[in-house]
Length: 275
Ligand code: IMP
Ligand code: MG
Image 1: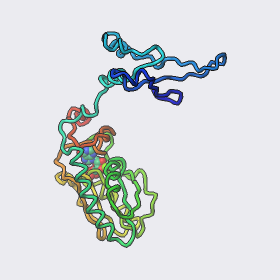
Image 2: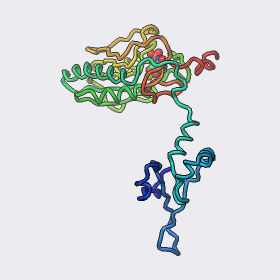
Image 3: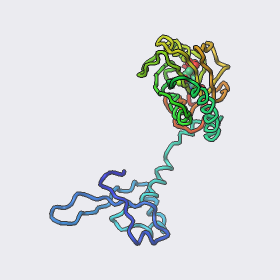
Image 4: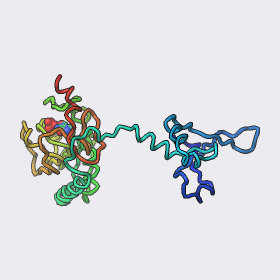
């Protein structure tokens, strides 16, 4: 809605009025060549729902601006009413945003102490896309020299069950030969993804490999995780055997943006698993 030729405008009458709408947008259209003054014309046209709301309420009608201005908060409220929240798919919250932040801070402190003791900077390798949020929050709290890179390992397709045959679909840019690598994962489930990745990094000559996972679901483990050299296993939370989403974890690429971790409502994936 906002673009370069729009300016936020607060006329004096609006500033004085207690009932003033919060944002007023004045669209400046190209100057009429016949006149030295720019022509200010109202945009955007309010959507029908917004218009109906305005027309119904005498209080709002009284506050309507002259025809050159459009009040946005009412339109925004009408839009929010029809928006479907990402939270609609969540059955219950396992770890709130505050609990996640506190735990990430603790893991970061533990990791930082170990990385500071290394003779040279470690390479932190995030597993895209799930580890994105965890990695970003984690490394910001690690006060130690380190490099950051990403790999993409895919095994899930769109469902909730791992195919068991992970593939590395995007490789590292940083050379890890002779380096200490910390693999950052969103969740270790069967262990297939991580084992495949550890073998890959070992082949590339990493001198030691640690794993730092936000969630660990040991109940579902099928493959033991073999760390390399002096590698350590860091874990945020032990996760019960539910399909969880949020804080980077997805179902069919959705829900990653939730700031907390929640259990996905089974009806959200029932159709897939019955196939
Ligand atoms: P694994 O190979 O079975 O250990 O699976 C690891 C990957 O599967 C993780 O990196 C996640 O991307 C995904 N995954 C496993 N469990 C869940 C879950 O409960 N929710 C969302 N993604 C999951
Ligand atoms: Mg993952």
